[in-house]
Length: 311
Image 1 (spheres, one colour):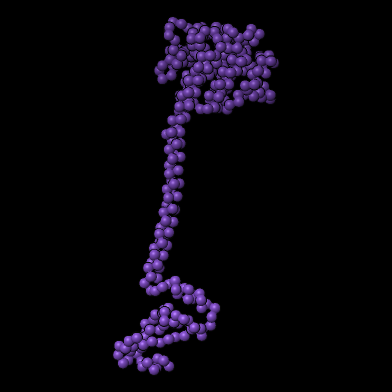
Image 2 (image 1 turned 135 degrees about the horizontal axis):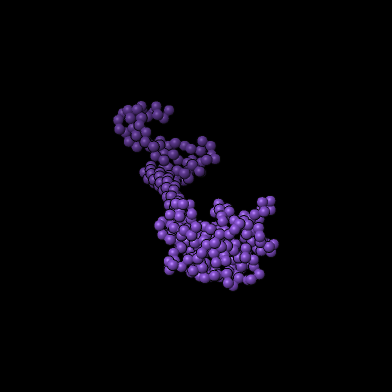
């Protein structure tokens, strides 16, 4: 009913119908007190002493012109801007933006006052800003899906936690434990992503490259096989037509001799009829002692008388 009347004070944070910050004992609650006059997170920042403001600048970039801080990350600028302008409320002496009231109540009930060990000389404003960091990280850890967690977001949480632990002496051991669990889940998520998508894509790419190489090698093998077949045919042909080696040696011997170094001996081997005969033309090197050994045999058919051939 209060929500319908636009009064959202002390309304427990709901996510999909469930309490995001569920208390074991429903009767336990902490009163929320509004400050008068209205105070925002920006007001607390401007009230910080110079030494505490310097500490804050180590986590933030300071805009000298606007005299306001800007977080190193740009991912949650909108949320930060909302927090800075949201009304500050007092819950058991801790000043936090109203939208984080449910979170700080949960922390007080679950872990007690985690600022008890904080040094007394820290201003209330500085402790409240550090408590705001704790509540901000706790809320994001509880509402961010594992699949939406990024490396940058984990680093951001780490810097918030280390800041409040070192510069405000706030006990945040439970937050380190949560961050370790989140980091472990994030690691497994990344491994799963690599195995399911990136690794398979790399395998398919490597497979395509290998198939391409295999195709080129097969083409070369086909070319080599074709050349080998041609050589085999040439070899068989040379065996049938005569002694190729002797012919090549003969050509080498007569390459630098005159054409008259050859003589043609005509031997009548067989008469088939009056008008034709088979002749063996035997090429004999002049002066050769082994003139009876033929080098090349050529069969010729003549259709005229032997005398006309000899002429």
